[in-house]
Amino acid sequence: MRTIDQHRYNGYFNDSFTELNTSSEIKEIQQFLIQKGYNLGRWGADGDMGRVTKQAIYDYIKSQQGGSQQPNYNTPTTPTTPASTANLVREFKSIFNRKNYVFQDDELRLNIIGIRNLDANADLFDDELVVIWKENGAYQVKRYPFTTDPGKGYLQSVMLNPKGTAILKAGQYRNTYKLALHRSKYIALAQRNGPVTVYRDNNKNGSLDFMVGNQDTGYFGINIHKAGTNSTRVNKSSAGCQVFKRAADFNELISLCKKSERKYGAGTKFTYTLLEKRGVSIL
Image (cartoon, rainbow, N blue to C red):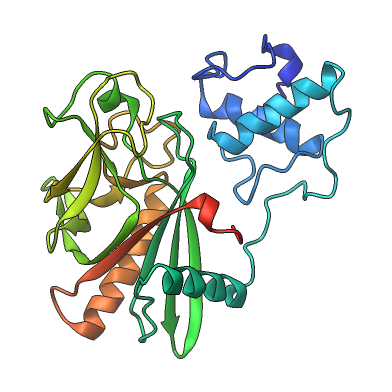
């Protein structure tokens, strides 16, 4: 197993941790950190160099350089379990109520909620998708690794829109999505039923400029789709779309959407709500 000490980290974050070239190498480092008692969140050693793994690496190096000598052993050494369904539902209902958003309580009506980390580093699946719905009278919750941001492939070079690369603005987009083909390839949640608002990032510096660029509202194809089987980098998987890290997780959501559509009819509309993590205390 690789250890952090076998790599030439200097104790500061760089953009890519380039000595870790593959998912298997990242996973070995994650397993090392877990054995040392560091909490890598609910996904554990998943081979993805996300924000939580970067922070654990930084904390480990700091401890070896005379900083805090031990990790916080009050945190679990294995992936954390999700908060109870009841507490999650209560938290999101409260947030939606404060923001004047609609929380859907009808049977098989899906609350599809993106949670954005306000980290300017692009190319990471360091956000989360939460799906809450009621089935047979009981609430169900699913949580998935996700990105709500475009990848560096578009932020640094190719801009599909001359105004700049799209970064979806936080908000609730009611009845904006439906099951339809994404780029004529496969069924996804497509932005077909209403406009969305995005920020336009056009400086090509590779960083995410939240709430800085000009706002733009319209039909931009900000779909909810998948990257690869288990992607480690966003790159050109998103030019502003909301994208799953793992194909199996995406397929599970689409199955839920189809179940909802069978109940409510072809062309059922879906609502997507994008929140910032700093406003969600329970996750």
